Amino acid sequence: MVSIFYSETFLHHETGWGHPESPERLRAIVKNLHQSQWASQLLWKSPTDRSPLNWILQAHTQDYVEQVQSIALRGGGQLDPDTPISSQTYEAACLAVNAWLDAVDAVLLDRHPAFVLARPPGHHALRDRGMGFCIFGNAAIAALYALEQPGIDRVAILDWDVHHGNGTQALVENNPKIAYCSLHQYPFYPGTGAAQETGIHHTILNIPMRSGSTVTDYEEKFQNQVMPFLRDFNPDLLIVSAGFDANQDDPLAEINLQPQDYGQFTTHCLSLNRPILFGLEGGYDLESLATSVEATIAACCGEFEFHK
Ligand SMILES: [Zn+2]
Image 1 (cartoon, protein in one colour):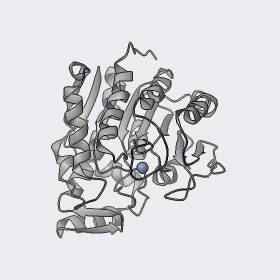
Image 2: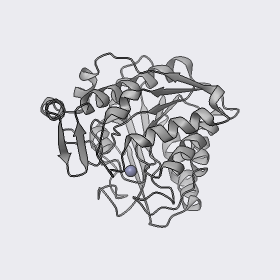
Image 3: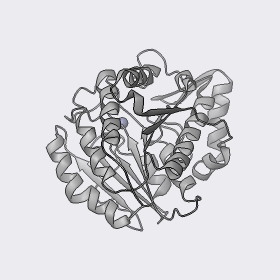
Image 4: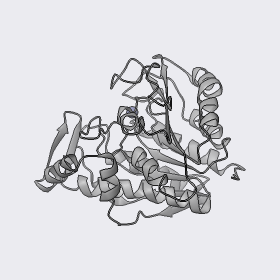
């Protein structure tokens, strides 16, 4: 079984005509999952409506959070040239954080994998500034939240979105209990993510990928760098910042993955034998996005069973 955290509130974060990070992304994923052969193995869950503010403030400044809220309250505006805010963005972004926190609770409790189908995404969000379609640092906030749960001493975040998660890295790199590993096209937006960026505790692993890379290149990195790094860190929980914009069909990048390749990456992650949650980051070609999420979930629905 796989828990899926989703709410129609996530569709109310509107980005305007022609923006790639559109509500249609979630609609395409949800429609495809309902029709998939895995539909009977999905546990659809609504995020709770607790206030996530205390957790958001672990990662972001109060001034920034109030800025997001006030732009939404006055009907919307631009957080940065790429990142629009609509009247219901603050509500959606808070509920997205809740969904990631609920997924932490769920995977620690019942040990099934979870997938968070939320937006806005988060891995570019900095402590005091949103950028790159991202408002709040969902993955980093989830990791900080997980560390407050009993028996959780180390959390790893794997980010396979095609862009470097500069926000997540900045939010966690000084915390020795959180490891961050990213594979991303480089050099590319947002400009960070050189291999030399390892963090003061050596808990950061950046794996730059050349434009035109294929699954063969990714597989080599998983076997020789990603998995040894994750095994060495020995996390109690693995959070995957799951963006699907490294697909060949994606309009925003130049990596040549196919949707089924994400099933292969997922199988590597499952081999760690740790509670695991996936949360949506990027992915802008609707068809390959939907089939990539399905491939990730299909791998989770395999004969997968983990033991701690
Ligand atoms: Zn991306």
